[in-house]
Image (tube, rainbow, N blue to C red; front, side, top):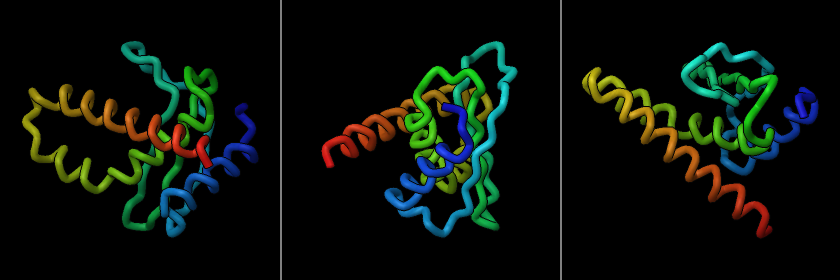
Length: 118
């Protein structure tokens, strides 16, 4: 899609559904430069001011809605994630991030499936 106006509509829809109304959320289209991983999205969070920007690849692997929901799941988990991240030894961080991504992907799938039922 890569239409900022349409993406903001999707963000607003899911923002309300996930109880994130008190956040200021924006979208930005980017080219990710990772060579080790095909990245479709990311989220940059300013927790203190309750602002976040969802970064979406100009060449995403997943649907726009799937990327938005996935990144908003990361926002829901943000405080817990960053608290845990500081407690994990460096040599275990890769495993931690893999588990975090699997968890976010699982929640995303559940949310999207349940949304289709209503």
